[in-house]
Image (cartoon, rainbow, N blue to C red; front, side, top):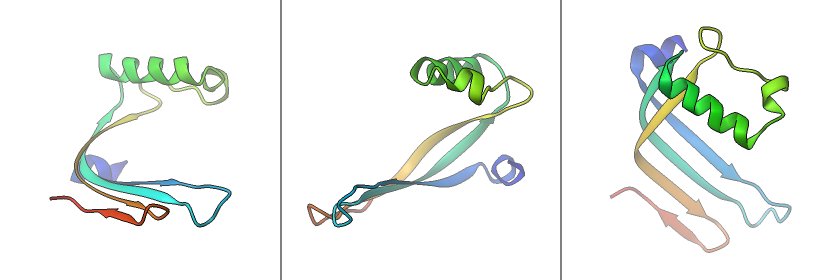
Length: 91
């Protein structure tokens, strides 16, 4: 968190796995990050998370002042769909 607060930028990598190891897909995005420790946007993110994953409310609770939410604003993206043979770089 210290690094994210100081630099305010990050890279996010998302892999889609499959039982078929020849069909992975991935996207890598780089952009600005804001660390939210409370406030309206923090509460909105918390409520969206809990609405989608209701068990998280008890299993992994988040609370203002104790937890943070990261707001990520991607500036560039690179994606790869191995099954389709596609590689997309930022323009």
